[in-house]
Length: 457
Ligand SMILES: Nc1ncnc2c1ncn2[C@@H]1O[C@H](COP(=O)(O)OP(=O)(O)OP(=O)(O)O)[C@@H](O)[C@H]1O
Ligand SMILES: [Mg+2]
Image 1 (cartoon, rainbow, N blue to C red):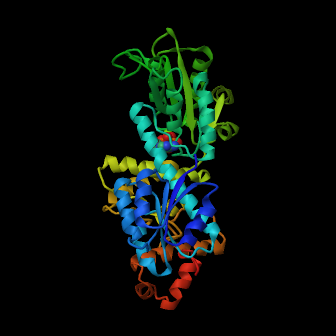
Image 2: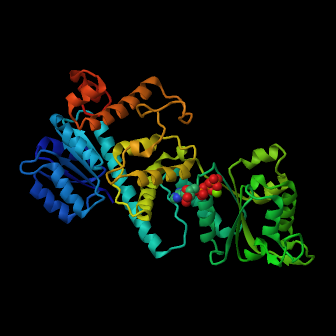
Image 3: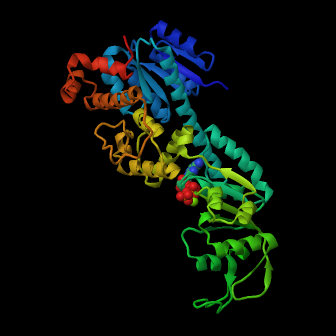
């Protein structure tokens, strides 16, 4: 189904232009005044509203505020004339998605902004759907997958889940390996059974051994009572061995034996017990390299690498960033009962361009921190506290190593970030912007144009 766009503008030329531009990819509805816009808005569920600021009887911004009372997540773009930068800045401050300056002469850029806004609406809706689904099937882990790379992984995951084979989940730290493991369990026939997790990187060899095999009373000092291990407790269930690369050589041998024979012996016992668990392994070190380096047994590697799943780092699936950010935003707003506003478009850009060496976990923490420090308005790029080369005044020494951009692109990014912050700080007032920045008043617009913050007249 095509997305629905409402274009409100008293200028027939603008209406027709947007309609022509978008009619292949959207269902475009047109209104020339506030009254018609109100009527249409009440009747349809629009994915995006493009609103002119100067209407015969209404101010576009007021009309959008009115619409937002009904639909707080409405995605909208304010269209302003050249002289209305101040209104536009107010719009951005309120967390409206973006603003565009008339006349539009770069149609590609116009289409791109509309495309981005529709994407944001889609993400909002997906998350709303997800929440409903979750409310009806609580217990299932939540996994946001929006990018093509993750969709592909999800297909492999759905195929692997019911097979009862060992799955090896590889991926950098924080990419969501544990989430994948939980999803595999919940989509398998063992979903009613227990799931046990053990981190081989965090525990000593003897603790891991005791946790997996269980022990008889008196098997070692401190074994005060007979205790079953995961091999028993996960009967008809799943065991996740996290950080499997860190497992000691001795334990690698013991695990291999259990997998080959389907039986195990508690520590301090001689009784062979049958095991019936499904094994999932996770690692953030490429296991093949560990094998090559002689640190991991190749026979165990072949045993556990029956179905490999590789979780790509976040920087290789940037389409996931926004949906994940919105999801976490929603999560932490509820958790802390805070009425945080939406993400401003500069914040979205910062998120989408960040390096995310800590992957999804880092994104989650970033949003959590932003919600905690937010004082009630929309979340700005500055609230994110990300070391970004695009933030004026950032210290390059503390920034994560970023691949170098072409000078032109780097400068454009810097200027875009600098001049949008400047115009916000100056409340859209050019003289004030000139005073703060030391850039001559008559040159400010030139900079705004070059940074593509306003469209050329
Ligand atoms: N696709 C996703 N959708 C929603 N939440 C996610 C997603 N991926 C990761 N998360 C969240 O991000 C955090 C990190 O994920 P997880 O613990 O699964 O990473 P990991 O790959 O196991 O990391 P590590 O290697 O450090 O153990 C968790 O809080 C998890 O809920
Ligand atoms: Mg993990």
